[in-house]
Image 1 (tube, one colour):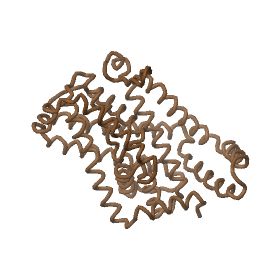
Image 2 (spheres, helix red, strand yellow; image 1 turned 90 degrees about the vertical axis):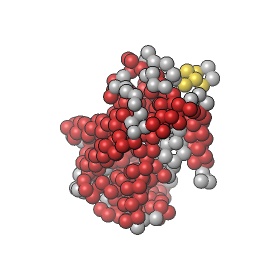
Image 3 (cartoon, one colour; image 1 turned 45 degrees about the vertical axis):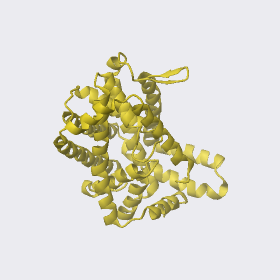
Image 4 (cartoon, one colour; image 1 turned 120 degrees about the vertical axis):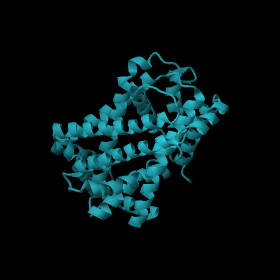
Amino acid sequence: MKRWQFWLGVAISVFFLWFVARKLNWAEFAAALQTANYWWIIPGVAVYFLGVWVRAWRWHYLLRPIKAVPTQVMFPIVAIGYMGNNIYPARAGEILRAVVLKRRQGIPISASFATIIVERVFDGVVMLAFVFVNLAELSRLTGVSVAVGNWQLSIQDLAVWGSAAFFGALGIFLLAAMFPRPTERIVCWFNDCLTPARLRPKVQAIAIRFLEGLESLRSPLEALMIFFTSVVIWLLETGKYWFVMHAFGFEVSFFTLMLMNGVVNLATTLPAAPGYVGTFDAPGIAVLEGYGVSSGIAAGYTIVLHIALWVPITALGAYYLAREGIQWQSAIQEASASKSGES
């Protein structure tokens, strides 16, 4: 909590919450919460956990060139990662699951980090695809842009810049995976030019292990399989959006919920308070309002959806973490040690 990044995230979350609260119909919001049929959350949670299982399978698939780890072993580790992302700032759950994976399977943290980054890039590409599917209709909507002074930032602008970032990163990873030897030589050259001599051997060892984590992308067929799996994961998560929608008595198309899913998850890449407070809620409410859902109902639905996404996986991940017997401070120390070189 002493780090400035934490307080920056809190400030951004407060801004987004203020943005929602200043125009919210509080009476309608309270009525929406009181009349909702919360039984619909149960099938939503079931579908969501199925998506988490597919995530575990995808990570198993990415790690196969390093070590074959069964999906049932990966599932608790993925749940721990979700819990960490939900409770700690800066997606620190990725550190937790890399540390747990090293403890249980002996996979170097730098190599597992490479696969985690690949996951995030593919997730970003799928989120952008969800936005692009609805881009033509989205351009006719109001209330889905943000004015910063005289500068108007629209969803189209975000999609273009986001595409450049995610597709650029994906292209770099694919090239690094397909041409490992030239990539290793380039990395070594940069290491020799930019790194102090005493740190070069350790940095080079970490970089090589990181490149090993990209081996699953060397085959175009395997890269396509990872992309297909990522689409399935996010369609299942959108299924949870669909189930929870029925608790609130309004109806939009599944494509609209895909768009909402894409927008809110791209927005949660911004710094925020733990649990993506505000950065999840404000964009989701704005998208629904753009499709004609009243502000009170949109806010009630989005906040309940956020809680339903947060609580079950966080509780499950906390259970698995307690079973592992890992303390957060020890996880940080192990991750820091990996930066100094792994055995």
